Image (cartoon, rainbow, N blue to C red; front, side, top):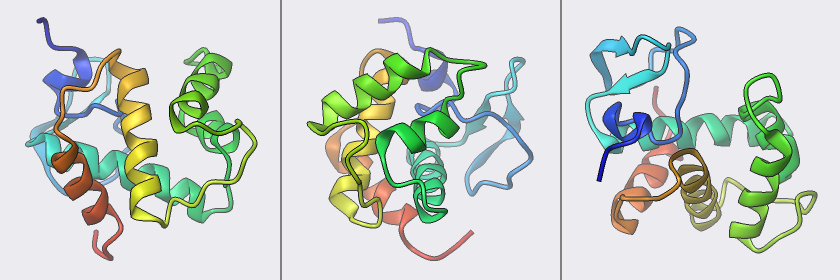
Length: 139
């Protein structure tokens, strides 16, 4: 099994480096294409969860609203992305989601990981720990 870019970078949500000082960034904070590199999968998943949660906290409370900003059409097939995440969550694209709820955030992050990588190689316990850490107040 050849690792995906997200797996190689410990960044399964494929966050780009926009200068955010994420906890757990690797010494080389990004790859040649500008995607963040993290020292561990836990740190990368936590950062992805924090990024998604921050969009929800700004008032983007549907899959369509969150993914439209997280994965803009200038870089992604955003409509397909929205449909995939909504289907994995078992909700409509315009149904409200509560990413302050740990289980919902975990499910949302897992759906994003599947979409970004075509698979999810991470244990549920790891994703649960990372998303719980994302909901704790810290940098």
